[in-house]
Length: 121
Image (cartoon, rainbow, N blue to C red):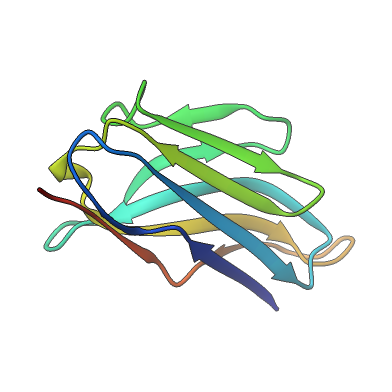
């Protein structure tokens, strides 16, 4: 029904930057919150940042001041600019979108397949 495709992960040195992008496609009437989550080996998936349709942003304390989330409602995309990256930012990053697929239909959460971010020297 709805597909989320992430891109932009990779290997970067500490202090470096990466930009993640996610595009939603499929049967979409409206997208509410979009966001990024991450999961490091042996740990639970955790919230990184979310953004509402009108642009209200929420960040985890661990990334505040370093990461910036943005979205383009016309293109159904969300991006995460990550600066001053640290080894502890290493994880698989997942895109999430809360979507209403038709007028009056259910509001459902969808996940992307994940993209690996590795911060290492």
